[in-house]
Image (cartoon, rainbow, N blue to C red; front, side, top):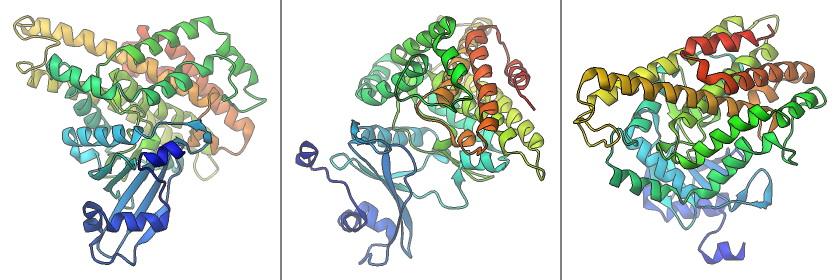
Length: 424
């Protein structure tokens, strides 16, 4: 901690945060300037890593987020680089440039303090995961998320950029290595071995967790995905695009918390979002009651999964066609110089991306059931035996898709797989 202090870093509490904002015009102006003596402050950081404050005055509101030099939910026994705040702010700014309608604006970033000030996403926005637990339908979610993913992934890839600019971006984000290593450990390694960090609904899932650790075919698939995650600098991805990183109303969708951002495989973002929707689907049986059996809501989730992929694929290929004569160096126009050849290249590219997304989505599902960090969708099911039923169905679905994803050609086939493991 002494070394952190020597670098000009100090954790802010409510009193010192007010003093900091008064001395920072980019933030003070958003709250109306002046004396700022009547600021309302609320600490809302319910995640694993950071302090997050909402500050309101009579003239405005902002969010201030500060990274700590350790994992907040564990303590200083698990050190964690504060530089993740720099990569979060950088990713928000770049994704905000490409898709401002679904990315909150960054007003200020202080690298020495690992502190970011950004737009307050006002009520009635809530975290998407909480809306899914409550059974709220979001009719624009698939359209908005497909738009966000198509734009952020296409415009940071070699389909749009030249190799010089692309490699500059890759080099910059290679420094976010600690966050990548955390993903490598908790997603691709720990679930497949004995680890003190792993947990599951015991004793109900003891055999299921053991089966994951003893499944050689599953381990081979996980190893392939881990290699792709480490080696494939395909686009600037969010890196943690689950339903807890999205704030929604029925009319608005805002993507937050890209502190895991780096140049990685596109399918990791797509799979994270789809995989978390699948977890939400299986959790519904545990939230059903006499007043609402959740069957209609489950159909909406499946519809959203299908529409998200189909819309993403359509929008992504449309961007590719629109910019096929541009600077992108992956498919040079004087080589892919007729429509049938370009169409064949696009079909192959999108098929591979589909399989990548299914693989990463399945791996994310597995780790949320037998790894360190679980999801509230399932954890909030109070009856442990009922929770285990939902988790087992999700786990078996994920294992099957992970192993057999290359035989799946359409998202409709994936939906059939999901339904086949539903115990309802």
